[in-house]
Image (cartoon, rainbow, N blue to C red):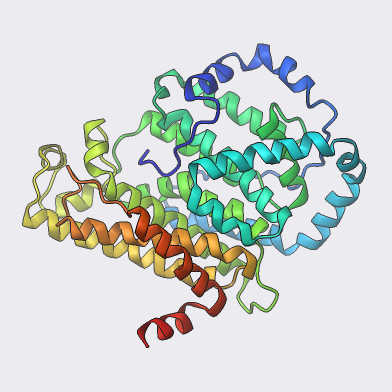
Length: 393
């Protein structure tokens, strides 16, 4: 992958080993959580978006968006049922559950400082749920993108998926799974985006080239767009919003796609040194470029022109995402706006480096990140249009 989520809680090797020995060890670890019997928060659809040659990836992924939106429309009913079913569980396992969320809080604070700070505006319940989802995504990504990724096999990912199913069905394996299990019982969060993210990990094990943008779009959905679909039910929509639920989900998906495209453009040189080229092969050929040009790492006029087109596409997805962020619950907007503003600046940094993403890493410095926080806060309070007008004035 291109570094969309890099996290290690107990170390990647330990995660790999726990998966390899999952069948024989799970009983011992699960015993500590045997009293946590959370109700399942949502139904499961298929484990991954199935390839259909006659339809584009965007069309197939949009079906997932529609299913997630339909589930959120039933939020009040689902949340009430989950609350009633878990009323006694909260009382019995309060200390254990709080400890699980506290550990997620620590991980998020250490590995995503800016995002973690942004969650402080959210209600305690929402931010704990977001931390739990964040930690699961980090652990999942680390399986194939961490320093010990060589330990991971397709079978290990199958066991990780089974462990996910267990968490959704109220059988958590460890503290982090317990936090996730509780979260999905409290919000209309569906299992499919989680399974689809694991499918993205499988894709990384078997695929290092993408023929066209349709293929790349599906990959970006798997590894990053899914995060948006997981998060919307927790973040919630603003009560005054007139937007459709589908459009908000679609915007969350667009932000994930934009972030992953940005990662790919930033990490061209790093990925090439690992023998990977995520850029669409057909578009490279149309620009008169090939993998060999990337491996040579020379910035030419052809490369600059090609990169300008790729950056323009990423910005279009950011523009689409902006429309939806404004429709989120006001307390949930800050971390999302901060992420959006910071990631957009990575594209600016690539341009500032004269499109040399072979040997120069485009990044946003600490000062710029800190400045992005009040800017994101201003947009959160005033909306993008009013804030832009004030800044220009």
